[in-house]
Length: 494
Image: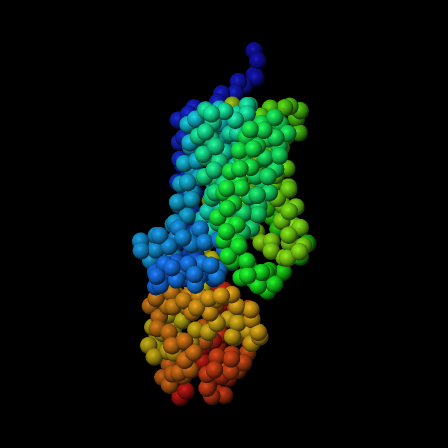
């Protein structure tokens, strides 16, 4: 009697139940992380850019077109501002919209292409188990929108490559999805557009070489049309962008860029070790099928995008981990294409991949837990003022307290002050007027600095803050350091 186990595929109900559970776990981890994570500087920018304190025309001219990002994310966020206000948790929850967009796009492919459902299921588990996805969804920036758009684009390209034929009229639905996903992928971030162009370009060349020239031509046209809005915004913003590029804060060396790439590769493989293992085993075995073909094209596209970004970084240091989010879905899609066949034929293997996705979501949530950022110092100054209501709180720009010359982006001074005021409202704190110099006679006088390096000596702080404090008060000062800033506490003049 043979002991050979006959592999059985998971049922459709089982697959749906696992995917639903993984999605719920991901959303729960995102909600918990968002509730316990403090606001940070880039999120303050996002809140400032979409405030309804000016007519829309002035907002576009004075803010969006003087920013260093395409206006698409700000425009969409502006539409929801009356509903969310400046509540940061509600604003982070706006990332559910691009998540729903990507989900709808991938589900649409699954409805039309039953043979793609296995890939889509594994791809979804890899995406939800990836650490950068959880990190991005709890940021009120365009980062998660970029990731979601490229996930949709990767799914569309999988459907095209694995269709086994060239474009036909029956594929108009898929061409429409390609247009929507490319439009989104190209217009949320300039470096995201750069990455997306490299990724899509490789697929266009590969499709032409593989005989799908009709698809190659149509995707080239779709890509060109999708890039028109970002090209137009670049033309308007190029002066601001050029000025910023000359003074950009990032100083990523070649070795640091390679280290970022190493972390990126780790995030890809660790998204799901079971699926990664299956994919790598299949990759080294001989064979030629549509899934392998897509995986190799996607792998080449990822390499080309990384090399192009590395070359750009050599000319102007720009690489940061979040600027690789456009590339991440394509790397995960390559793994999913290789792993989906074996995984979807064996219910035990599928359960292993699904359980690993749940475990990774839990681990990622624990790793990402509660970064205090600005909230640490905001809570501290709020507590000081509650203990002694006459406490004078002077919020100062970090560049002023650093004591050196600083390159400021357009609106940066206004954004910095808006961030302090936002945190003051959240923590029921009363700030002194901007540039004020009142020293409390009965309570401490505080100098609050966020987004800052380690503080200088208390005497230097007092001088740079423009406060007339006695030597005794300066000598007795204490400094609280927390999150991404610090607070100097000068005792009252008694």
